[in-house]
Length: 458
Image (cartoon, rainbow, N blue to C red; front, side):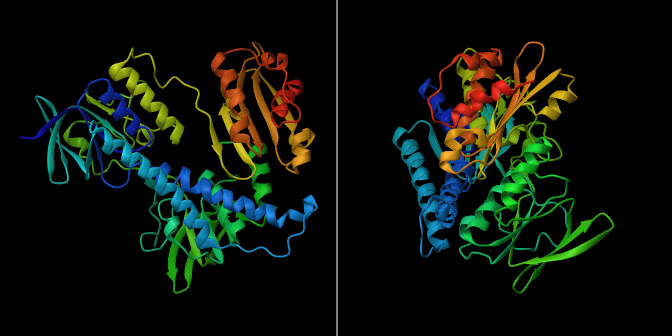
């Protein structure tokens, strides 16, 4: 007879693990199915190892700039395999902690294998986990995404570096093509450039980060260009072929095309949900043509008793939003049902300088018909930024002229991912932006720039 659970969580990512533990703590019998590694993309190849690698790249960058600070370094070299080893070690440590946490508790029970729906039953749902058969009253999907491979000639046979496998590519490519100018493409492009690669980023639209305001995108592109990153804009990848010593890409422009070759290529053309092998059609779960599971504001799917969280539910694909999805489902399944997708979700692009973002862009606010006032402060006017020798970037605020609410903010700066949280809190309170003017800020700090930007609103 198949083992029965109150809840089966499919996928051990940053939302699935804490949800499974919360359900178990509430007295439910819970299983967590994971076919590969605990921790999801964040721990295994995303947030954790990339930010560790970016820290190494920043040290290399500062070493090259040492003379700007009156320090002379006679020689500096990058040991690329050691950089990857450090990043991998930190990722493995994080994964091991999750493994110990789950094995110690016993509930939730960890099931190793690929989970797939078989049928609906009187008890809920029958699911296979490799050769094991289980039933569950309710099921939560948290299966994450993988690098998308669009239908382009030759792309299936090309040996791309991707978000998933970059740690296994131990040899630093002398030249690198990055296909895609989104946040992954920019972050990894700068990383490889600081490691020593000659990097070209190919972007099909007129600006990098197409969803951002043009002034923000241009400033970030120029910061990377200053480090030697090359950009091909309005350039569409139409073909790929594998060479004996690398890869050749056919790039189409308005009025023509060109061949671009490199020792390696990094594919950064978005993410594809891991929903195509779950058997969703057998239990009536609706998904889009791109594999995104359709959910309501409570994260409920079209089939009662099946829920979806994390990247597969569409919307922002970030670790922190996936983690907040756990709080929504905890509220819906064993709480007061008050938490929903009605939330303010910030994000960051972890280039250097970083881009910290929350709320609407100026472009979005005006398109929605808001009467907008904008504030803008260059970081070169901030004392701590000058003292640190990190004056690149600015603070941009988008406000509602009538009620003085902050509609959105962009900070392009060192530590912008930290600084933007001040505006996140302001937006969550719903208070007018003038509330920030009454506070006393420590001097000298970068945070003073976030307060000073208020005075520039007009």
